[in-house]
Image 1 (cartoon, rainbow, N blue to C red):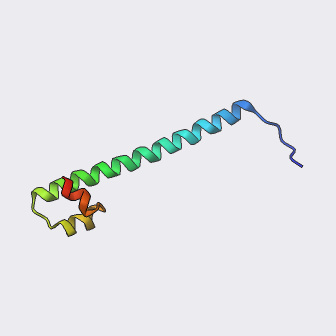
Image 2 (cartoon, one colour):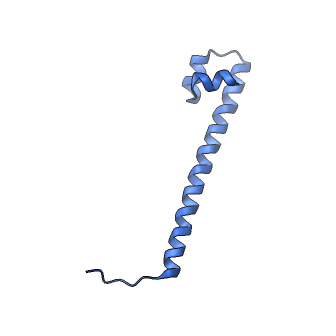
Image 3 (spheres, rainbow, N blue to C red):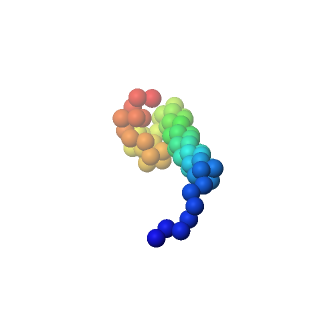
Length: 67
């Protein structure tokens, strides 16, 4: 049997904190992707082989060829 009281304010605070954590993780992922794109563009300008760019940035060959 559950012996706890529901607290609306605590529930809302927990939900907001979880949403902030999710937004932060999504922002970090987006920033990492943007950095990989910038690095790949720089490597393309210096004529690195596409296979090496894929290895260094984690991007796919198709993503690099679009740049």
